[in-house]
Image (cartoon, rainbow, N blue to C red; front, side, top):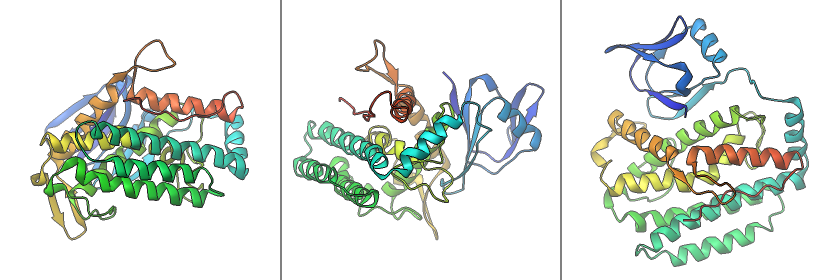
Length: 330
C-alpha cells in the first residue's frame, strides 16, 4: 500500500535522477516514489519545476499546511483518470436540485449515523449519552424533509452542535473542555486537534478522489463556487466521526497528547511539532487498520473505505446503483 509522507522540517524537496529526496538540517533523506501516495508539507520547504514535473509524472499530490497546521493548498497533478463524461454527470446532478439533494442527503445521513455509532460506542462504556443520541435521531429524521441544501446544512450543523456537547462527557478531562466549536483560530486544545485532524482528512479524501474519474471541484452538499475543491469536504463528513474524532478521543484518553503539547499565540492555539507527529503516526495506523466489509469477502482498510465510497458515488452518477453512504457497524 502506498503511504502518506509527512515533512515537518524546513528544507528543500528535489529530484535526483529517478527518485526524490528531502534535504534539511539532518542531511538528505531519499523518498521512494513508488511507495508515495501524497506528500504532506508542514515545514518551510522549497522546490523547483523539475521536482513538480516529476511528481506530476508519478501522480503524487503535494498538500501544503501552514505553521498553524491549517491546510493551504494542493499541487494537484494533471488528472490521469478524469473523464469528460463523469464531469458532465457531476454537473448534471449538481444543476438539478432534486438530484443534488438526493446525494447531499446521503452525505448528511452518513455523517449523522456514524456520529450515532461513535456515541453508542461510548454509551456502551458507561457514558450517559442517550439524550444526545435521541436528539440527533430526531434531527436526522427532520432533515429528510429539507427543501434545499441550505436547510439541509442547517440541520447538519445542528446535529454536530449536539454531537459536540457529548465530547466533554466522553473525555471527562478539564484540560480538553470543548466549550464551543472554534476554527481559525481554535480557542482551546480540543478545537485545535479537531481542526488539525479535519484538515488532514480533507487532503486524504482529495488524494483518493484523484485516483477516480470524479472531479473534486464539483461537490453536492458544499456549494460548488469559487472554492478550489468541495467534493472532498462532502465525503469527509461521513468519515470524520469514525476516523478523526475516535482518534482524538484515544489520543487524549491514553495521554498520548496532553495540554503540554500546545502553545498559545496571539493567533490562537497551535499544536507543537512532536504532537503533530504523534497525531499523524496514529492517523496513519488507523487508516491502515482493516475491518470486515458487508459486501466484500475480505477485510478492507479505512483508507480503502474512502475510495469505495467514491466508487459508489460514480455508480450513482452513471445511473448504475443508488448511492447509500457507508455506515459503521461498531
